[in-house]
Length: 207
Image 1: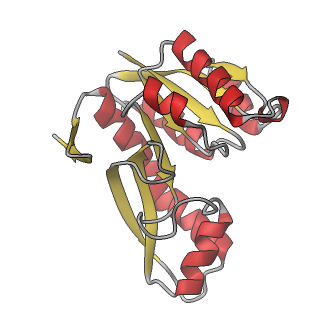
Image 2: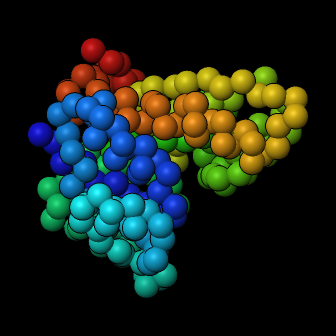
């Protein structure tokens, strides 16, 4: 049984999707053992508490340098014996220390079809604003491994979602969360925990 540690910064909707998936048996071979938050008092911590999951707060504001903050988070992940680290609305880009400590053992869900609308500055509603401005007819979500390149790691799963003529960034965000993020993130986590993801020449393949 693999230990899954989830990194959060806010409300924890993706964390809830993972908790629900674990309870319903969608996630096979792993369990959420700890939630680490970059902020105090966020609702994700309440979700962890309600489900009997250990939580740790490592406030980003307490660290001046990103290197020092990354070291603190990395040390916590090692202490928790994390087999898989899941970014679930974690709003801090950590440096290469954590990537080297957990190579191809960290995954993130991004609310667009990478390589579109991704990289530095593309987070939250900014992603959906950019998609609507470009006039795309499909958007969606991507689960990928975390590497030193922001949103540049091997793609594990993607799911497309239609963009409606009447969409606002908020309505598109909601549809992508409900129809894509909350489905493919638990699925990718389960695949990892069953050792069904293989990296060949920098690309991820599901076995």
